[in-house]
Image 1 (cartoon, one colour):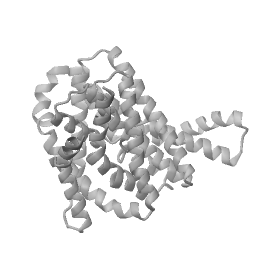
Image 2: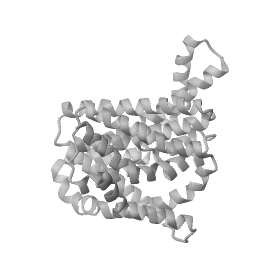
Image 3: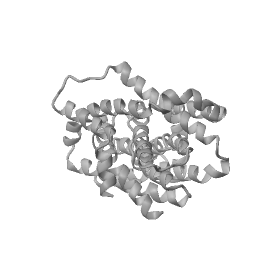
Image 4: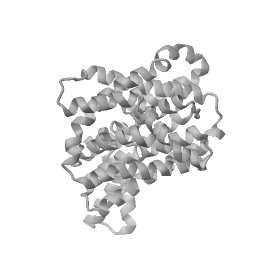
Length: 335
């Protein structure tokens, strides 16, 4: 375990992320142009999607059905647990919902770093894992917002309990059209699902076209992206500190709890060692693309400094440095 952690810490991906954090902390003038940052995001989404589509073309539906149900289970349970924990420590409802959606959804870049880590270890994983990335992005956002509607209706006591669920569901569908659209057709889901479908339809014939740019250069582009993420995370660290040690503790405990749960779910649904570890990586990650985009329009009262500060400033670096090798170690223990 110690050797795996050290190899991860000394990898170029992690070291460039740390460099970005240091640059932000010393207030360096190092900045990424907005257009370049957006381009790198698009590249990673397409690379992950098309590679997964090519790999998915090699599998039958009976092979992927159990992992899909496992992924949906994690995406549904996680926000419920997070909301319960945060309400116990008396966080206000809107910010608790923001964190429930953020930690219930997944980080594509953390997943990409996990894939890169497994490749360096020479550990294979199921190609259809990229499909699970798409499936785990939206359910937590929907569940979190539905919980918000249910709780608000209950507090107002406008209707009896038997009518509450029906009314809340109707208001969820009527009021949250923007969220449904963002969850289904937002940039990250659209690019991931679209490139995945293209790779799946074309199959192995797409490999010759995609390999030079989206496969061979993936690790190098990831370094650039994580350098930029380090700059953003470093800027968010003061915001996390301003909210006290309990939130920082939460940002470390949640990936440990849900990452471990993800590993057990992956093992239960019959994934390989690499696939089981990646299920842990997905479950232990926190979104900073899809969930924040949805929260900005649906729960504007939730503070971005909290859900973005925790996901980028605490959970993301924790997973990058210690979480990914830890999930692999747990998966190896189960295997």
